[in-house]
Length: 251
Image 1 (tube, rainbow, N blue to C red):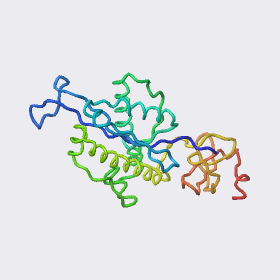
Image 2 (image 1 turned 180 degrees about the vertical axis):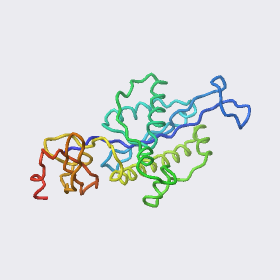
Image 3 (image 1 turned 180 degrees about the horizontal axis):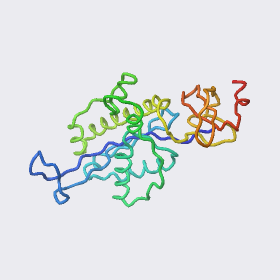
Image 4 (image 1 turned 90 degrees about the horizontal axis):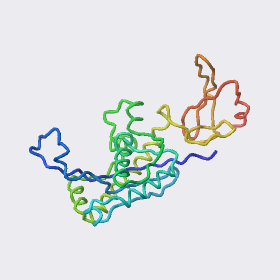
């Protein structure tokens, strides 16, 4: 069964620039905003591939706050995906990216199916923190690359070395994101189908035929045979009337 195209991605953005009266200002009105934020770098990875695809503004583009080129490149990549995955994608990455598309009057992305790993972690577990950095450390003892705000200031000023460091930081985040997603898959509920539909019964997450019977699931209107995938460890179910056990007899 062919898998759907799942794209992991992450954005790094420049801060907004504004006049403030006090460092304790709670709200900055629009007339005090000098420049909105823009995309400094992005990194992406197709599920099932080790290749990291990236985009980064040049020093001149950063100084001019012109992210048009890299926004167009990422938009073309996202349009190839069936599903996009990011940490806090629904509240940050996708709205920010759509804002930059609007700023440049580019073609909208159209309907986009998202998986937000931040939401997955919050719904399925009770972890002390749900940040990407903590999840990576908790799950496999890895960490994000350490940075401070000076890096963002230097990138804002168009420092080429700082932009290269930012891109390395961004690339590492996508590597961590992809690993975290695979670790979460067996435990979370309501993931969208990630394998194309066929006439055979296979795992809807990874497309594997390596299914083992795990009892039944009953609802008010139907009964289902329940199975566990030996490849991705997720559970799936099929209507009992479809009787898929003969298909699995040889497994």
